[in-house]
Length: 300
Image (cartoon, rainbow, N blue to C red):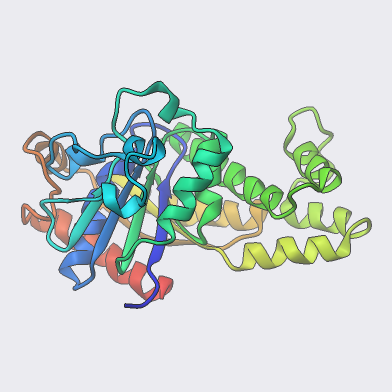
C-alpha cells in the first residue's frame, strides 16, 4: 500500500458543516475505490461518529492517551461505510479537549503510522493552537465554509492562524524568529507588511536562509476549498473570490475543488444517521463526486 494522503478538514467557524463534509467525502472516496480512515480531532466536542451513523465508539483517543491501548490503530473501529475506520475523540474527559504538548505529539505521530488510501482529520471549530497544530502537521488541508461573510472571515482567520503556526513550528528554540512571526500577527503591530510576501521581504534582510525555509514549506502545502450550503450561482462565485484573497495576502494557492448545494436531504441524513452519499441522494452524490474527482487529481 502506498503512503496514505492525510487531509485535515477545518474552517474556523462552528456550524459550517465540517463533519458533514468529512463523513460524505470519505463515503464518496470509498465509492471511487479508495480505503478511508476518519480521525475525529474535534477534541472535547467530537460528533463525527454520529454523522457516520454510529453510536459512541467503545474505544477513543482517550484510551490511547491514557496508555490503555499502546497503538493508535488499536482504538480504530469499523464504520457503516465500507472500507473505512474511525478513531473518535468522543468522551467526557475535559483534559482531552486541551491536550498537552506530549499528548498532542503522541496523536500526531500515531496518525502517521495508520494505513488507508486517505485519512480525513476532522478538526474542531476556531483557530486555537490545538486546531492550528493539526492543520500545520499535514501538507494537505480542506477549508470548509458557507457563504455568509462571518463564515468566510473566520475561514480566512483559520488559514492564517494555521499557516503562521506552521511557520513558527519550523524553528523550535529560535525565539528570535518566532518573535518576529508572532509580532506580525499581533493586532498591535503597525501593518507595514500587509501581505505574507511583504513580510518575507522584510525578514529576508535579517534571516535570508530562514525565509527560504518558510517559502519551501508554503510551496509544499496543498490547500483546498469546499463551499457548503450553496443556494445559487452568486454564492458559487464566493469560492473564486476567497481563493484570490488568500493568494494575495497569504501567498499560497487555495484550490476551489467544489461545493455542496443547500438541500434538506442533508439534514434528513443527519437525523437518520449516516452520510447522504451512502443514502443515494442524487444531488448530494453529484456534488461529492465532483469534489472527490478534483481532490484525487490534485492531491496525488
